[in-house]
Image (cartoon, rainbow, N blue to C red; front, side, top):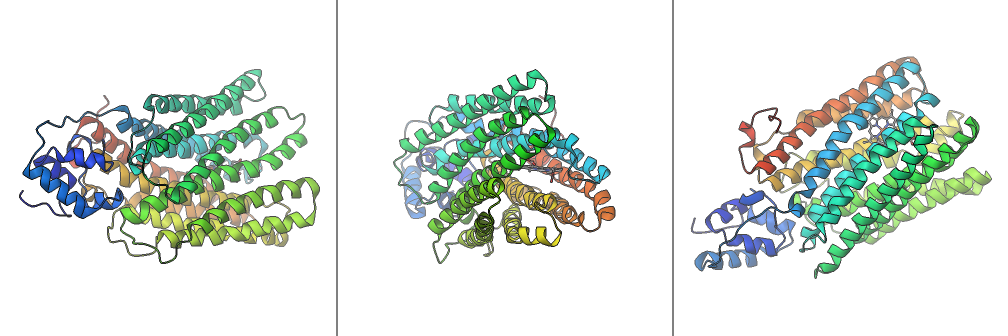
Length: 516
Ligand code: HEM
C-alpha cells in the first residue's frame, strides 16, 4: 500500500506500518482492536478520538517513509481488558437474576392478578438490586474504565484498584440479594451490612480512579463531563440510600410500618438511581460518543447547560416535593411534584435534539436503531409523567402503582437497557478488532425487545381497565424480553471471547464456542 487515505482501516495501516501504532496510541487507541488494531477507517478513528485527520495522515505518511528503528511490541494489559469482566458479569446477571427472575415475578403477578402482592416484595427488590448494580452498574463501570482514559487521552489510574472495585461490587450484589431474600433472619442483617459496605466502597473507588485518571490528562474539560460527574454523585447517593432502604425495611415493626417506609424511600431511591445516575451517564456519554460514532453532525443550538440543569433540577424538585407531600399532605407540594414531572419530557426532547438522534447518520451501523429507539422510549417514559396525577384522579387512586410501573419499565428496559444493548454491540467489536459490517444485523433481538417492552408497558396500564385480558397476557412479555437479551448476550459474549483469543474470523467461529 503506497497511499493511505481517510478510508483506509486502522488495521491495514498497522499491518503495513507497525510503527503507526505509536501515533495511534498518542491519540488514545491504546489496546483497542487487540494486536491488529480496529477494522474501522482512519476517518472514523479521527472523528471518535477528536484528532485532526490531515495531521494524522501526515504523521503516518512520515512514519511510513522513515520508519522508527525501534520495533513496536503490542502487549495487552489489565486496563485494556478490564471492561470484559464487567460486561460479562452484566450479561450473566441480566440473563439470570435480572430478566429471568423479573419474568418469573411478572408471571406470578399475572397468575395472582395483582401487582401488590406482599409475598413478592423481597424477590422484586432483589431483582431491582441486581439490575441497578449488576446490569447498569457493571456496564457503566466497565465502559467508563475502558473509554474514559481514551476520551481524555491518558491511561487508567491504578487499574488494580479498578479491578478491586469489580470484586467488591460483585460480592455486594450477591450479599444484597441474599439479604433481601432471607429477611427477617438475623443473617440478613449481616449480609445487608456487607452489601452496603462493599457496594459503597466499590463506587468510591470507581469515582476515585476516574477522578485521578482525569487529573492525569492535559486535555481541556469538555461540557459533557459535568453530566458524567453529577451522574457519579447520584450513583454514590443511590448506593448509600439502597443500604438505608434495606435497614428501614428490616427494622419495620409491622406490615403497616413496612409499607409506609417503602412508600417514603422507594420512590426517591429509584428516581436517584434511574433519573440521576443512569439518565445522566447516558446523557453524558451520548454527547461524547453518539454524534461522532454515527456521524450525526453538530446540533445547531448548543443547550448542554440548560439540559444539565433541567435533569438535575427536576430530579431534586421531584424528590423534595414527593417527600414533603407524603409527610405533610400539603397540596402545594403536589404542585412542585407536577412541575418536576412537566420538566421531564422537556429535557428528554431537548437531549434527543442535542444529540441529533433523528438526523440521518453518515456512518450507519446495525446498532444505530437501538440508540434511536432508546431515545424514543425515553420520550415516552418521560412524556407520560405529567399525566400521572390526572390518571390517579380519573381512576380514583392516590398513588397509581400500575401507571408508575409502566413508566419505570419504559425507562429501565426501553431507554436504559436498549442503550446498553446498542452501545455495547457497537463498542465490543471495535475493541475486538472485528469488522461489525460482517456481523449479524441484530434485527431479531431488536424487534423482540421492543415488542416485549411495549407489551409490558401497555398491559400494565390495561390491568386497571381489563384485568381479565391484561393479567394473563402480561406474564409472556418478560420471556419475550429474555429471549431478546439471550440472543444479544450470546453474540456479545462470543465477540468478547474472540477479542481474548486474538483475531479469528467471527463468522466461522464454532457456535456455541467450546468452553475453555
Ligand atoms: C428485562 C426484563 C425485566 C422484567 C421482566 C422485569 C420485571 C419486573 C417486575 C415484575 C417488577 C415489579 C413491577 C411492579 O411492581 O410494578 C419490576 C420492578 C423493578 N424493576 Fe424490573 N424487570 C425487567 C428489567 C429491569 C431492568 C433492566 C431494570 C433496571 C435497569 C429493572 C429495575 C426494576 C426496578 C427499579 C423495579 C422497582 C422495584 C421497586 O419497586 O422498588 N428491571 N421488574
